[in-house]
Length: 110
Image 1 (spheres, rainbow, N blue to C red):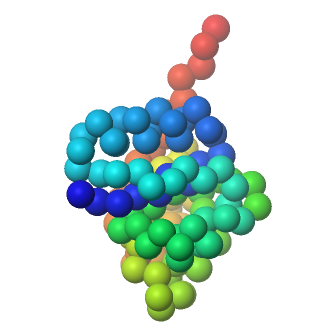
Image 2: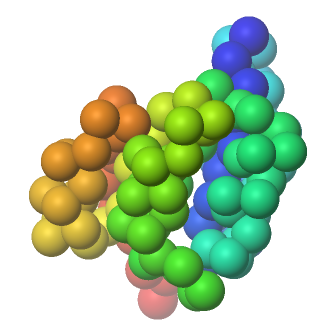
């Protein structure tokens, strides 16, 4: 089983994604984080194999968090970028810790 953290400022989206991932029994979501300033601290504490990371978050954005992951030798966590911002995704592709990209599609209710 792969241990993961979800970091996204949308709490409902985090909960939905965590529920879906936990159902698969292949991934266990250890924590959901809604503020970019707490992400590195929780990665160091929980040591997940994967973080599913939104790139636009309050506090610190996803690109800043990816840079921290890349530059801190004690962090081995791999990143799955989860964003609707294609220009940010393009920038994230330059980092070795980023292993995959998921494009967010928003469904608007009338």
